[in-house]
Figure 1 (cartoon, rainbow, N blue to C red):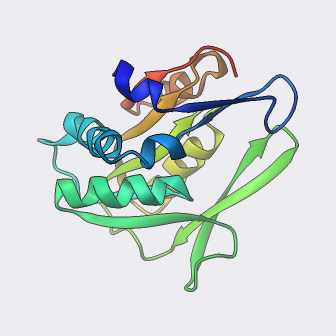
Figure 2 (cartoon, helix red, strand yellow):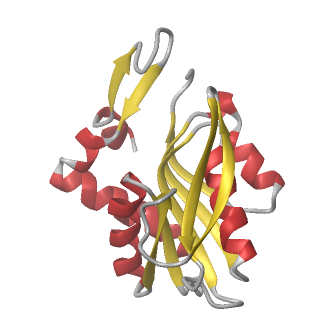
Length: 176
């Protein structure tokens, strides 16, 4: 775990002063680090019945596709508003500076399908909570959510756990 944590680059004062941005692109660019990350993200769900992995744009696509391959299931992209070519449903979530929307295709999930949500980082949990709501609205059942990084001081993982969602993160960083 410490080896993986050392591969995450910290960029101070990005995107604004006082923020310590945790950049996982350096981890993803390391062949052994990437392979170990996917293995560790997959492990808690290896024996659970999962029909599809839903990856949140954009790093969730990279991670989610690899996890879906390891689990032998399908992949569902969760994208920013206006990026999917078919009929969609959307869910708003709050940002520090306003509101944004994520969407999935309205036919992406069949009723009762078991879905694992994947993204690179959980901070306040707004995007992940919106993803949970989208999956639930389509009739899917969220089996869990997995992330590389948790920023526990911002409370996102606690928010998901309060919704009854099993939340797994490979590492945590103090601060924002």
